[in-house]
Length: 193
Image (cartoon, rainbow, N blue to C red; front, side):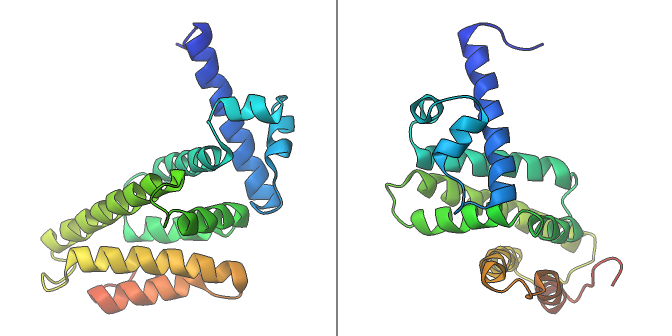
């Protein structure tokens, strides 16, 4: 049942804004999208739109959180192949890769709204991927000598680095490099390889 009253309407309006922002940024690109365009897309003024987020930086962090929510739902059971598929899907939305890359750089400032988002993104992502590796190790698929934490950290860094590089040179085959990294670290190949 939908929430009623001003609070419920505010949540609903915020979701509408995030959906419009995701679509617009994915389609046009982060650098080519202004807050004014996002506000117009949902029938608000710029100040009306920012009322729901506090600042444009907080809006963009909320867009990244929404994207993460959608990605987690799409992955279902996390597997190495699902993570590769996620990277493949990201090539269809380069504007969202632009957004992530810009917010990632801005997050180096501990006072930036993206700082805590990125810190948690990496902490939770690395822990989740390390747990996936440990599960595969328990099932006998990856040697115990593979350090799950090191592998998870390296794999996430490679994925993000490749996406940044792909923005500059779309001929980079991100999937190839991720598969190679996985195979070299674990000795396992992906399904379908």
